[in-house]
Length: 143
Image (cartoon, rainbow, N blue to C red; front, side, top):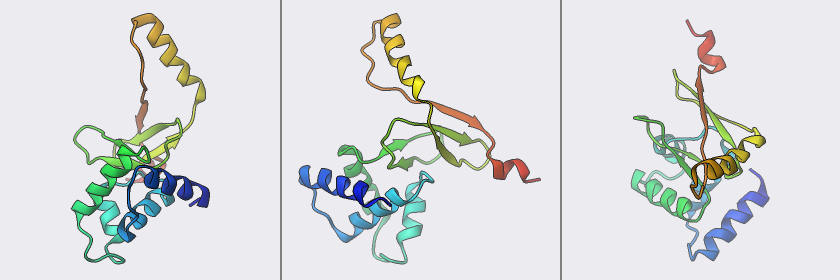
């Protein structure tokens, strides 16, 4: 994890009046360390050894705070559990249809679509999201 990213996150939380607890610190550090776009259950399982008294509700509550302060994005894909992404840079996702793995990819010219959509529809575009669905490398080699 980049110390700079963590410091920026701490500043945003402090600026929003959010007190840093050990559990909040651990959840945030985990999210900033991983590129796997974890579910709440994955976060819980990874931290339960360190925080045996931490509940799933604590994780949900902290993720809500992180979303409200702009530190994470919640990714929903149909019926699957929500996944959380601490990478708030403009990027897109490739989703495996077999194992639900989510990977980031970047393609910067796509931001121009917002201007095109606004001019052709009259919408005031706030954001966009793109997912590409396929089979990850690991699932391609499984029988």
